[in-house]
Image (cartoon, rainbow, N blue to C red; front, side, top):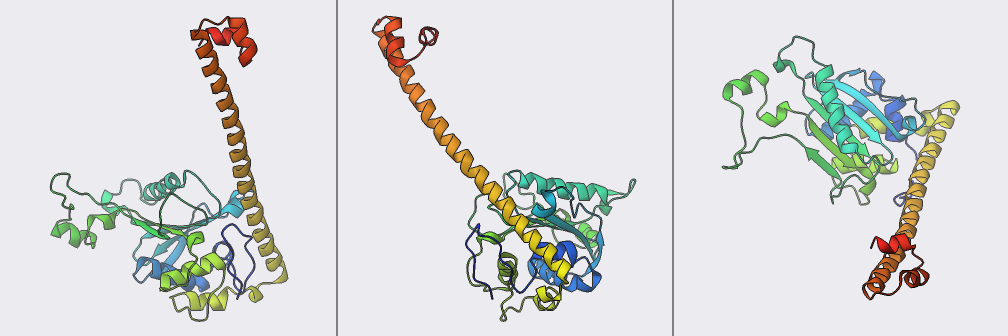
Length: 303
């Protein structure tokens, strides 16, 4: 088993294929649906059977996107849509991107002229390898509910609506969002979901892990099942992820350094302006103030 890496370290090869690569190349095969079904069953806490995969924005050919992200759109046996997206590097507007993705699915997968009762349930599952937002947990769940502003009660469905839509609450009609911040997981897995997150973070599956789908992953996502060409392509993928992350870290470090330099320069300029203002209030000649502070006569007059 590979050693745990610190956050930001180079992703090292282990016995198993990284989850994003598996989504791109392997899990789209119907024979491997059991792996994804196990993960979704663990996350959503209900038995998930994937009926088929649908068209999505997967396998982007943009030089950045094709390594940075991958997504998959599945339809389960209840006709619900499940969008799974892996994002490797930081995107400051990712929350809005999640909203856009689910909204697009809602409108794309309803036929023109159909009633609103045909709007399909959407699950947005986001596996992010960067620090998204500010929070202490590693898994977040978002859903829509309507709460009274005076009584504080939650708006419920009528018995007729429950029977018609086959759900128990209004929130079950709306998109639900899951965010897994896998890079933040650095402890022993104590639940089936944490076992999945451990695999997503490290690329390893401990022998003790029993979460649904991980046994299938052990059988089908081993590195030694790949051909030499597939293995070379896989390692190039890992190398490109490292390059992308290094670029992000470098840009951030340079930005911080430039910001500090600009801040110091602005601080010195502000000190000069304050000094010139004080000297000007004492009726000291402008040319003398200019010689002392280095400010131009025009700048001093404007103070």
